[in-house]
Image (cartoon, rainbow, N blue to C red; front, side, top):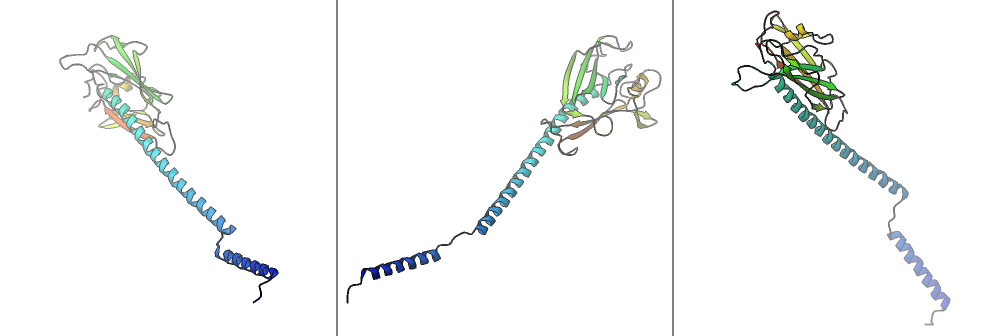
Length: 251
């Protein structure tokens, strides 16, 4: 057999290279542009859904934390106010609720003393009022007077403490509501705009309603979502007040 010439070998080598390249091209799988776009869109949808779930979870966690904060803060302030009001029926000749009380300004007398003390030698007047979403408790100590001559107090408070911040009057109804007996039923006293002395004398019960915000100050959503409306009451007497003569304390 005669040896193969150079040009023939070259043609055969080129043909082999072409066959190998064709086989490699057939065996290698690629990604089309449409497939790439579908993959990208699918990834974006999954990522968006994950972030939506995460955002919802964080929002729910924050909402529950705010409700808990508002509830705790409101209960502490309400309990302190209740304790002071429950010590307001202090003497026979003095009315617990004082004149000039309004729907956002509660003025009352309160006092505690050792059981061995037969009568009070001093008295404390509280003025609980709302100012710029803060509930204050101004305390006035008596500077004279007795049970029979009426206690006298300084014009300025001896001390003022913050009961609660982030608080406001309820959306409907008064923050402080005063009730009197009409027959055997309790009806609302309507200060215009302040209780007069005869009206204050008849006050038998005080209803308290506070709209409390969380410590974060968030007011998102309706009442009950993050803000809490808290209610309480204090009974001053169990029988109607007499129109004339002396009053028994908390009859």
